[in-house]
Length: 264
Image (cartoon, rainbow, N blue to C red; front, top):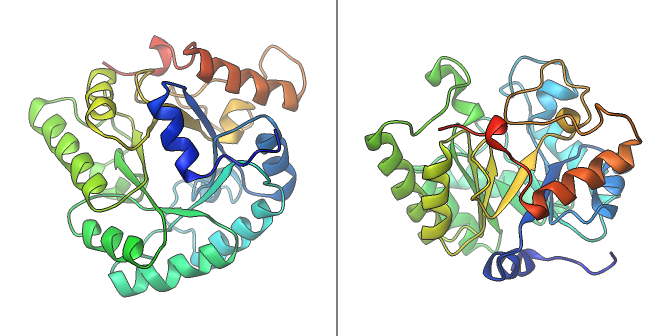
């Protein structure tokens, strides 16, 4: 458990066909429990705006929030890769992105995550060029929720599916080391995972991704709303530590996500 995973280790897991278990964490105590369970990656997500701050979306989360929670989580992580979300409007330009990403790295992140392709590709290239590892995020992008008109599955029609696949290839070509794919049909997620050399981490994207990520509060059943793509691993009793371990085992075995947690 003391061996560090490292970003290269995540790629090696994909190459070896080993599923990568990932979770969010927002403070030292939970980060330590999650890390000790053998997680490949821990994300300090802007989801904290909902599950920690009690908001209805992630849009009000600030850089100061992300830096604070990244610093806390860093204190609990010894083994896993620690990634941090770039919050809404923090990467409108490459120069803004670089300044803000440096803050997260200084707080202890090993990788930053940002959403989208298009103009974001220039941002990814700039960060990678300056030595900052990047995780992309495609499919449902929570920071674009106002454009979607709600939390809706993406890529169901053929045109959207091809766009997401092409965007994923572009994100990889821009230099990203990892990709989160959220709320897309399982078949599309499988195509993307097979097409990319980098690991593809799914959330609501089916079992054919290289790994899975969920919000910690969702797997413990303490979110105000548990989305379909999640599962309460504490619902049948036991300890928090046991619930986290059960999640890791379910991901590694391919038991999770099942059909009930995926989309056609």
